[in-house]
Length: 304
Length: 241
Ligand SMILES: Nc1ncnc2c1ncn2[C@@H]1O[C@H](COP(=O)(O)OP(=O)(O)OP(=O)(O)O)[C@@H](O)[C@H]1O
Ligand SMILES: [Mg+2]
Image 1 (cartoon, rainbow over the protein chains, first blue to last red):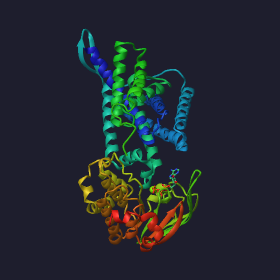
Image 2 (cartoon, helix red, strand yellow):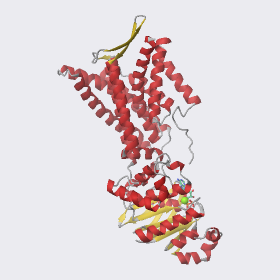
Image 3 (spheres, rainbow over the protein chains, first blue to last red):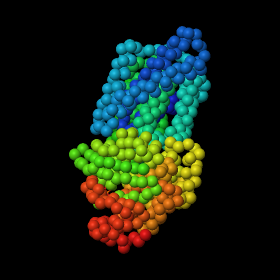
Image 4 (tube, protein in one colour):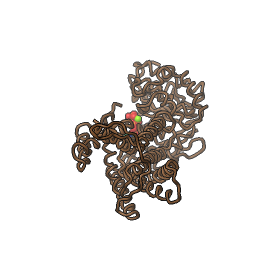
């Protein structure tokens, strides 16, 4: 019972992180109808910025966790949204209008480039940082096992909920959100109404990147270890989450993230931790085969 | 106000417009009629650079707009209500209207919204309904209202009566006339429904295979035997204005 509760907590935490990354996939897909395969690496870059940032701040004697977190988040969001913008400019915009596979390949190219860049400059070894937020709340003890909700888990969930609320408001209620949704539905028509479609697409890439950046910082703080490969793995899982929830759907991305997080947590605990990734990939294949529109997605074919 | 000179448009190997000369003066209603595939929609869309013209010039309000990006052309006082309405189906009626004035300030938006409610009372009752669930006629009115939200001096309409019941057609043409006469909006109207179009229009052009083959006042074209034979057979009796 306590063990299950613990897995529930761990799964939800992990799922929140996947959900944040999945939103970037889903938004970019929504607006240009293509998967941005360089998206997972944004999360990895952000994690490296976090490690470097936290280490430097500690070296300069900044001991306030809140301050360090704030500075690092700001830096990570800034850097990665510039990177998100650059990916769109370099890998997508020049290829707009060409066959669908072409920008896909160029985004994979961007991803490999970034992974190798980080591997070269940062080394291939795992990077650790000392735990920043320790402690937590003991919830339940059964047969000597105590389910524990750590403060960093609380932080991750709170930040995710806040971001999600802000994001939903942005998309549903603001003029930028209307433009964004209009571009999703009919880009030519949106341009005919005087809206700079390219700029809206750029902003979408940047917003998606910013969310992935937050996820990267949170994970670094949570696990305390990162390497240059985490972007690929987390990227594929978040991508699966986006597909499972229904690619193009914001609530779907979050729901998909939570489901993947939970499955992963329970699977590693009750079945096999080594094969936990198998679970995610099986889901990806099953969803693609049997319900390509996902849980909350709309079918590709629309009545006109 | 609008002047096209020697405009050519190609879609790859297809030569869709072959040297168009056309002008619209301030305060006019001008109609463009022609058979399916004549190039009418292409002409309207090319004014916005979708597609770009391969040669010629498009001058609006004294400025050559043929090289401007689409969204900057749209920010001039010119609005297009495109073929097939193209309302945003998953946005509400209100959101669609707001998109029409997305680049304007709040004051402008409120004034225009009030004007659209007066012009199209049905829309006001449906503000929170998704545009995709409106009837065809309601969608057409929404599309026109969205086009008007930007307060254009020149309104371009591509087959606003397409697929609509006679009652709606009547209403739409009535609205267009009102816009022109009372609000001073200049109109360039593409229509299959030549009979209606020529009756509201001051002047008309006939387009055939990408060329203008005839032009003149609405009345002259209505009376012309060729136009009658090609575009008016049956139309006269089925939907009197
Ligand atoms: N995107 C496109 N790609 C290739 N050819 C096109 C494209 N759009 C239009 N055409 C061609 O250009 C010609 C003119 O088409 P256009 O849509 O302008 O005709 P239209 O006069 O508006 O016809 P309708 O009355 O049926 O709407 C047609 O032969 C059409 O097949
Ligand atoms: Mg047409």
